[in-house]
Image (tube, rainbow, N blue to C red):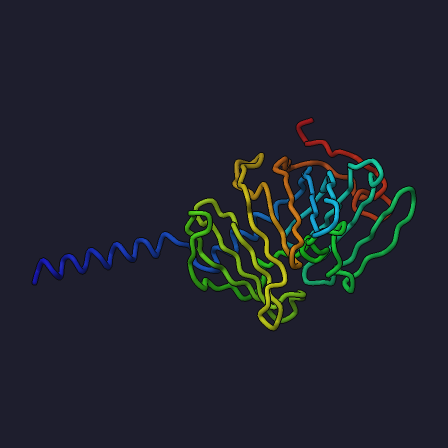
Length: 262
């Protein structure tokens, strides 16, 4: 009896330690949110869009970002191919305010972009303007709803739902998170009816200039038989921007930022 009691006590203690090792929903969401709110950064990537019966669209893009807990500003600019070079999109959001921005088409055409266009496609891809800005890990409602293995990696499934005053075109988002590296290996975004509107799979993971694990290649599906791939791990932080670069008037300027050390 003593042996049985001791074994039971050890088993309970071991289970408690395992449970304690996993972050809570709020801890996990807070960590993932902070990884996105990482100040000034610069990325170069390749964006490929493939739809049935159509030629693949391939773009080289540079992304300028200023992301904090209070506001997000992002500029996407096409570097290649030559015939589309200079196309640009500015997106911004302060707190829970609606999305605003601008779209620029060379040589000098610019038009405003607002929240009503948030569901529209970024450069014809399966990624919307709203997806670029939205940090659903800051939403009020966060819960662990299960566990599942993705590509042989054990993941916690984090469900995020917007609270009162938090605007989104999605009713909920589920993330399959590798809690060892704090990387979402799969993200599914749902409508109010429970249908998957958009699915994002991490195909490869790399480390950035801060030695953090980040998704390097993403596969995005928002329509049947349509797929968009983003490939790019060249991420630099602590770069220096001028305010003008995040205005409609500055979208035609194809600057590459410098770092404070340069």
